[in-house]
Length: 283
Image (spheres, rainbow, N blue to C red):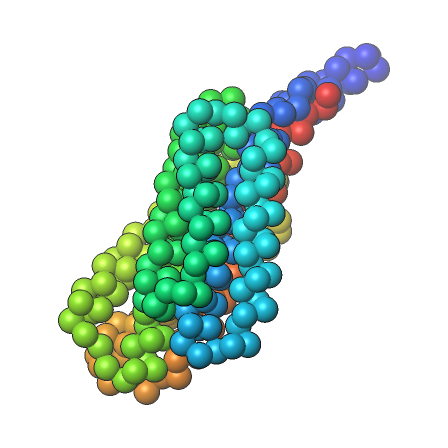
């Protein structure tokens, strides 16, 4: 009788957790985390460089720190098995080389040119993220596939759209006027933000319905907070920034966007933590 009880417990445990560890998923999780660090460091470098070139000399030290973070993230990515994939290697190498050149010449560029150049590299990194979502998913567990796609194809692009609107919107507020091309650009960002936020909420709920035990207890609260904050930010943008009569403070608007990006990164990290936990089997 005791043997049957032991076997029943073992079978239940195996159903809840794989027997063997998924080393590919572990490695993929580490690569994804470093790619996220690269996106964030590049976004910060873009904003700080723009600030420095517009006269804020105190940003210089922070720029160098974020450039080191970019280098460290690339170093980790290059050390992982996924880097040997020919498509991944080619795109990652091009990004690395372009960022090195850009960091070396950024202070000699016009502020708008430097900003656009870093934005182009963020776009290239996000394209790499799409590649990782496709090329690196073959050997992942179901949760690994779903959560990795959410992180790479939804959450990271959402942080970038918020970051772009944050930068353009704060500039408009500071100047006190808005051009027609800026209105069209922000309207496009608003549409993309609303679509990505809706997809993040829907996909996260689907994943949590099957894997709630692998996530932090505060994940539901974080999702609700992010959705509420994004709605408030888009409403402020529609009702004030786009109306050319904003009484907002540019720094406050920028900080509000930064806070939302931090929330999104927390949700990203919760997913990656769950993927890593899911990759660990009994052996």
